[in-house]
Each structure stands twice: as C-alpha cells, then as structure tokens.
Amino acid sequence: MIPFPKMKLRNTEVRVPIIQGGMGIGLSSYTLAGAVAREGGMGVLSSAGLDRIVSKRHGQKLKAREAAAQDVRDAKVLGSGGAIGMNIMVAVINQYEDSVLGSMDGGVDAIISGAGLPMALPEIALRHERSQEVALVPIVSSGRAMEIIFKRWKRTGRLPDAVVVEGPRAGGHIAWRDVAEALAPENHLDNLLADVFEVVKDWGNIPVIAAGGIYTHEDIKKYLDMGCTGVQMGTRFLATYESGANAEYKKMLVECTEDDIELASKPGSPCGMLFHVIKQSPFYQQALARERAPKCDKGYLLNKGHCPSKHENEKTFCICNGLLASIDLNGPTEKNLYTVGANAHRIDRIVSVRELMCELQNIPYVADVEAPKDIRAHQKDSLLL
Ligand SMILES: Cc1cc2nc3c(=O)[nH]c(=O)nc-3n(C[C@H](O)[C@H](O)[C@H](O)COP(=O)(O)O)c2cc1C
Image (cartoon, rainbow, N blue to C red):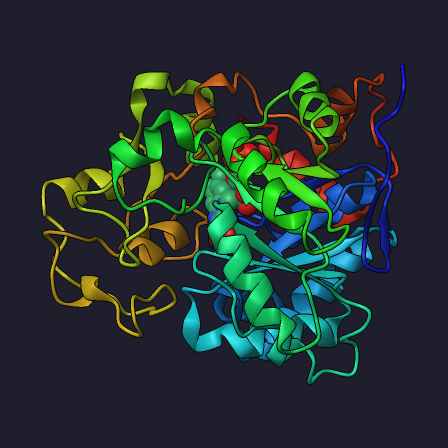
C-alpha cells in the first residue's frame, strides 16, 4: 500500500491530503475539526453562526471575531497540533471581516472561502500580523472564476495558496442557480478541474483541491492521479459521531435514498445558490407548503446585504433557522433542515472520524483509545444511534 502524499498549504504541512470541508451552521464543529486534525487531515470549522454557538458553549456572550478565535483555539486543543482551517462564506457578509481576523487571532492555518467570490479576502488578511503564516484558499467552480480571482488578488501582491474546485454534487451551496445547468455534463467535477488547471498553469504552482461527490479511497486516488494536491470532503464527515449534526439528522443520513435528495430551488436559499436537501427535512416540508411565515431573525446568509426570507416565503426560505435547529440550538420553535451532498444516500452507518480516515487511506482501523475527553463524550452520545 502506497500512502497518499502529504499536502503543503503555504507553511502548513498536512500529513493526509484530505480536507474535511467546512459545514455551516455548526455542523463542522470543533470536535469534528479537532478529530480530523488529530488524524492527520485538515479539520475545517465554519464561521457561520459561531457567535451563537461558541457563546453558548462557553457561557459568555462573544462577538463574531472573539467567537471565531475561540473556536479555532478549541479545535486546536483537540487536534493535537494538526492543521485547522476556517471556512468563511462570502454570503455571510456582515461577519466576513471579523471572521477572517478572528480566525487569524485564534491561530488558524488556512482560510477557505466560497459561496460567492472572495475578492476582499487578501486585503483583509494582509492587515493581520499573521498574514504570512495563513494559507488563503478560494473555492471556485470554473476557470473563469479562478481567472477573476487571480487578477483581483494580484493587485494586493498575494495570490491564492491553493484553490478548492467544487463540483455540483457537493454539499452546501453550489455555484449554480439553475438545476438543469448544475446537472449538465459539462459541469461534471472532472471537466471543471480541467478548466481550472488550464487557468492555474499560467499563474504558478498552485495546489488544486477537488471537492464534490468524492466518497471512497479510490475516488481520492483518482483525483490525486489527475494532478490534484488533495481533496475536500463534507458529506462523509457529516456522518461521523464527531460532527455537530443532531441525532435525527444522522439517522436521516443513514436512512435516506437517492430519490430523497434534491436540489432546493423553489423555494430555495436566500442567497440564490442551489443546495441539496433531504426532502423529508421537516423545515423543508414546511417551506414547500409555505407554512412557515416569512421570518429571519438570524441574518447570517444574505443576498446583496438582505435576507429575502424575512419578507416572503414563495421563492426562498430561511435556512439559518433550520440549520441551527439541526444542531439542537434553536429551541422547540424551529424544525430541522437536513442539507447534504448528492452522495448522502450511500451513507449506511455513522462512524468515528478515526474509522473514516482509516477507510479513506485504506489502512487498518485501530480505535483511538486516547482521544481527548470532548471527542470521547461526543462519540458516547452518538453511539445511541
Ligand atoms: C451539510 C453541509 C454543509 C456545508 N456547508 C458549507 C458551508 O457553510 N460553506 C462552504 O463553503 N461549504 C459548505 N459545504 C461544502 C463542503 O465544505 C465540501 O466542499 C463539500 O461537502 C464537498 O462535497 P461532498 O459533500 O460531496 O464531500 C457543506 C457541505 C455539507 C455536506
């Protein structure tokens, strides 16, 4: 068995070239990211909603910047010195700057930013004293988007340290607004990668990370053989004991079939981009029946600075409230929303991060008996599944 090669992102060496994708809100929790880092991959937090999540965990009111810093510190403690990244969505515009600076305060190794083009990322990051230590990684879904980012970032003197190329089978928001376009053969991840490689070759030796629908050891090998430096995976990590998803969410991941997964579009996300949901999600069902009155009292995910779900429920629905409910953080008033990648129907059981990382590397599994208390506690709760 030949081990996968290491991955270098700016100053950070990642022993296993697997990035656990950021999953908002609260799904890529500090326990998940810490456990992945502990296993040699890069664990990635998500900045969305951290002011609420980390304030609750620590029993004190923290603003976005302090909360991002604290989440990184907490994940670093669990991660035994491994690499921790922060996913920051451009669409969470009101907290973008604070999330970048806070993550850097906390000692983050990489900032990974998509759900819009992260044009301002280098300008913000360069103001921080750790700017030369932190890898800045945009997420794109076309060579054109890559080109635009290169040209804009060049003005600041800082080019991307890597790029994540995300295809339409990915969990979270995808780059397309139209279902037929998202499913068109030319938008298959392999074609998007070819397109991005074509652009990247003119700008230097920048690592390319593949994402969206990657599921097995063989899939990872395929993308490394194609010239990628690593992969980013979300759905597989969502289905671990350590993720922030609540018990009903994890149960649904195990039970859902291919027919149960669809791209939410009418109504869809407030930010206009498509995302996969499990049809039976109670929050989604309510949205389809237009039974939830327009309301957005969280205001993380915005469209041109506003949340349309505040005033209408025909075209969009408020996903922040559904996602917060799915990590048991929204009281009994809101129902659960289950968002996934297109491959979620392949999940047949919930596993530990250790077991998953062994499977993905094709190495024998040995239980992590020395896992830190927070990770063990999480596993124990989830064993009830
Ligand atoms: C439940 C879920 C939530 C996600 N949330 C985010 C997010 O907040 N921001 C983001 O950039 N990507 C998000 N993603 C995308 C992942 O970071 C990753 O790129 C993607 O899941 C890869 O595709 P896969 O799920 O097929 O492995 C999310 C993915 C999932 C499954």
